[in-house]
Length: 80
Image (cartoon, rainbow, N blue to C red; front, side):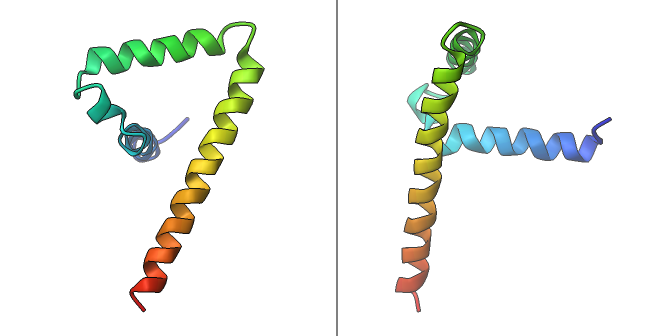
């Protein structure tokens, strides 16, 4: 069983991804829009194209994380 603290940390991380992707701003902070979008993603992951979607989105996410890490590293180097 997951502790309350672990669950809270997990939910905060997921919310951070929503903000990091800019979805809060793009959706006008409309929770119904975000929920509908997440349901559309869940539908796609429940379908025949699940593996292809996971592969595509995973690659895209890894590239975004890598680009962010590189940009943060460059920012740190500038301040030295």
